[in-house]
Length: 107
Image (cartoon, rainbow, N blue to C red):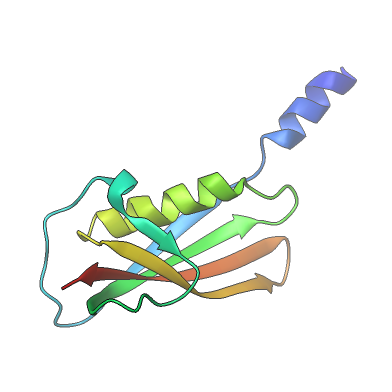
C-alpha cells in the first residue's frame, strides 16, 4: 500500500501551457518541435517575435527539465518558430512555477 501511495505522488508533476500570439505577426506553417531550439537568452541572430509561451508547472514534485523544454518547443513549433527563449522563471504562490518564453523565427 505504501509503494502504491508513493507511485501516485510521483506522478503528480505537471506542465500546462498558454500561448499569447504577437499582434500583426505573419502566420507560418508549423514545424517539427525537435527543430525548435530552447535558449536561455534572446538569440543574437535577426529574428521576428511570434508570441509568448507561458508555462505553469508544479514545484513539488517538479517536472523534469526535458519535459519543460519539450512543452516550450512543442508550443512554439505550432507557430513555425525557430527558437524559444526564456524571459521569466518565477515561483508563484501555492505550489507553482511560471516560465515565460518568447517564440521567435529567424530571418
